[in-house]
Image (cartoon, rainbow, N blue to C red; front, side):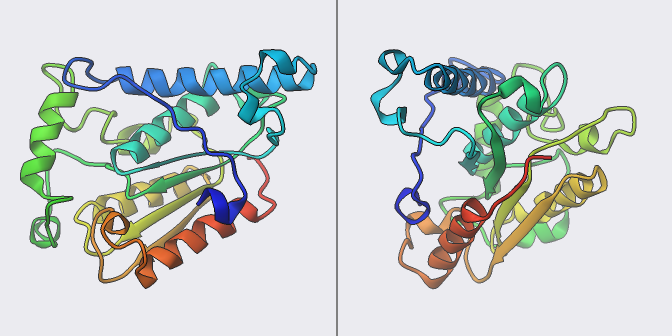
Length: 235
């Protein structure tokens, strides 16, 4: 992805469950974003000696937040924190966050439909594994309907103004998570967020790990490249 889009990819480290339950990972992701912002300020002031050498020539006017699977959920929350009160687009100058890329995000709710239960399951995504992981990452006493996993109640609330940068959501039709993610996408659109969806067919959750050379993986990568390369405007 870095090579195709001519991008510098900054991979954020974050605390892991069960030793550090949510929202620790979201807070660490947001701290990483604030660190990146500090780098953009150093660059604008020509304080290159304070910068990470990899970022001295970076174009901070074109930044994207991205994540896959659980990392997609993390990326969504980092963007939500960055673009909503008490922060806004102006908070991040001179850095400009142009887009959000969610690859098979792990949005879930407490109840499951029959089509979700009947959908393809494998070693990369099955409900038994998902339930076990959820118990390890949520704070004690929290259900899956907590906003950490279920963004729909906040996004759908008329009393809660909500925005995100222009977003690309990548899904797979053999991934049981995609049904609910599509509902969340519609709610985001109703909240006037700009969201594009690309669905790959005949493959499951994070299929590209085992099938990086498949036609679907190549199409997905091209979709990401197109999204990054276009002249998108921040909302």
